[in-house]
Length: 212
Ligand code: AP5
Image (tube, rainbow, N blue to C red; front, side, top):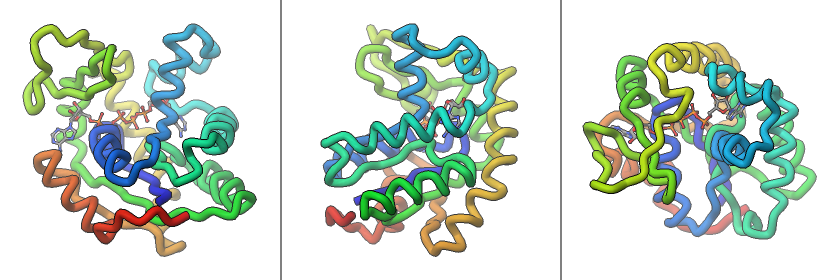
């Protein structure tokens, strides 16, 4: 199974990705997680780090290279779930090219729809457990006592608006691109996480097959 999860910042891509990956036995491939891991390891270029922290998009060639290498790893052989990539048409075209070279194709592109006012509220209250990577919301899914919590630099109120603007600007072209290919499936991302999961699975046809 090869799934692409798209949606604005805070729409629940990371939250939904975990369960989907367990269900289909595929790895989650998140460009945001990869960039944050490089930041933590001190290997992320200073300019890229500033771009990320200010809510901008890093250059296409950087994320395309990350995806090219990561999806060629052995654990991606049964399929994978892309979270946060592609975000632009050039990224989508590059993905199409590298999959074609490997004789693979996307099964579905899932778009999580959530209104902007909810996204802002979700992001500002998001916390992530540094040790486990578990995503929490201080109100809806509060962390347990003793969790070692992190507040992402780009989740500050002044940055969240910029990220949402950047997403709206770039998906204006990305969503029609996948719509035209008959791959786009829109899912209402409002409701309890488990309700959204049920809609996502329905959009995927409830399939647990491991197609290419
Ligand atoms: P990335 O890490 O991909 O961030 P994002 O797309 O902004 O998405 P988020 O991780 O913020 O949100 P999410 O949709 O995963 O929501 P979550 O499940 O956490 O990218 C970060 C940065 O890296 C980018 O800004 C850019 O600089 C760079 N980058 C990455 N990929 C790139 C690319 N392809 N090209 C260029 N640059 C790139 O949930 C959010 C909150 O909501 C949590 O608190 C959660 O508990 C809560 N929540 C989840 N579901 C629900 C629900 N159903 N109801 C209520 N609350 C919920």
